[in-house]
Length: 222
Image (cartoon, rainbow, N blue to C red; front, side, top):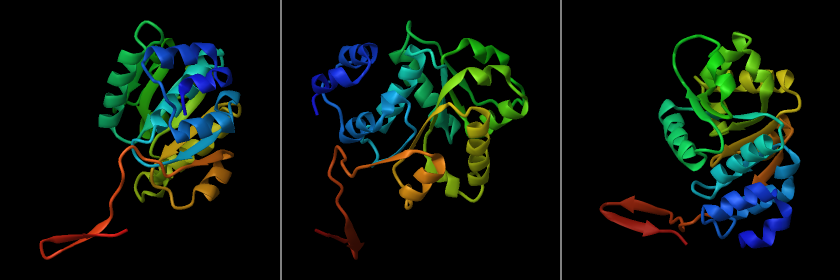
């Protein structure tokens, strides 16, 4: 879908940012997310393949929250390495527009300096620590993105993430929640628990071939 065809369906400032970045087309999950109420602060569970455009959905949610003065955005990732990657990417994209920070340290503190930042990348364990320290600036959060939400099923980290989401929804009842995953077996059930609209699509930028390797030969399935 051409970006220009959705000009009237998204905030002008966000449209201008996408256009300036050279984005000429929206991918299926992005179109579905906008139609489902992304800019109306509808909670979303985006379940689409890797590289299908989920991150841009999250970015648009964060930008909408900031431009509309609903509050800062927290982007939760499972790994410090992923937080570092996203931090470098976002800092470059939004330099001069928004302040981007990363908080993944092992130090158990309230990180009061983060009150000055607009988009904050962190792990679920770090956010759990901030909540337990009654961090005052958490009340200024308007949007929370949860990347790789399927890790709720992980035996070691899943319980922390599940409890964290439960606490956040009670602590910030008006927060805009956007969850992302490429691998969820029960999206409808999870979306219901989150109070979110499920965004499902199978489109991927590169065709996925499935096959069986045996005795030095690969047999691809139709």
